[in-house]
Length: 289
Image 1 (cartoon, rainbow, N blue to C red):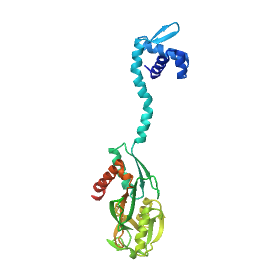
Image 2 (image 1 turned 180 degrees about the vertical axis):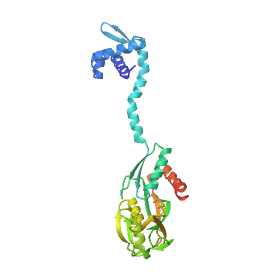
Image 3 (image 1 turned 135 degrees about the vertical axis):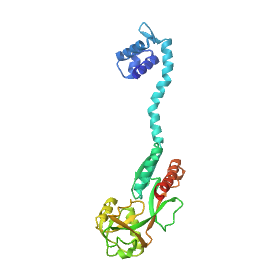
Image 4 (image 1 turned 90 degrees about the horizontal axis):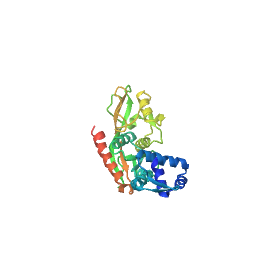
């Protein structure tokens, strides 16, 4: 049995008139007659009593009609139900301004467990649609009730392995006044934090290379073209034969990576469940290393 045959049958059963049924279906009358005939042949029963160009449902036809009506009604509702279900699928609108690689890895792990949760990510400085925001502030910043610490990380001074400073274990930032710096561009959040470190001791680094790409910054430092700030967790540890990381004694170069959860978002079970997962995931996969 084909689906169109069953639809044609129900239309003829409703009108008990082939021509009217064909008009309601917007098909030719012979196509409807042929479909009914093939359906009766396949079922090996007659579904209509035919007399003087008039047809009416017989007992077999009435039985088939009673069985088909709820099935076809369910099929007719199915597209709308699927659409409604997709609209109700939980979506977390995340503004990802810091630690993007770490958070992305966590999202991948989370969706392996909860594939029904969707994420929409943005990196705009201000995204009014975001209901979960990842950003960073200096370590001495007092957090608001809506802000939650995910982790704290130090910044190192990264120097080429062949640099005269490579043998040092730590350094004061002011001692690098004559060094060439490689840095992210000024519109990047990580750069803004590093600028605050420098401003706190009235230090202006001699930036000779800027890039919007963190990988480019890392490669330029490894190539010996300058020194630069290197976050403890958000960037992978470099190969020691290319780059050495020095602790910075002065000033305090560290930041808090935080999740900001607006009041309305805090009432959303999907968002809060992900937040709990994220904090646990960071503890297990980042801070315990």
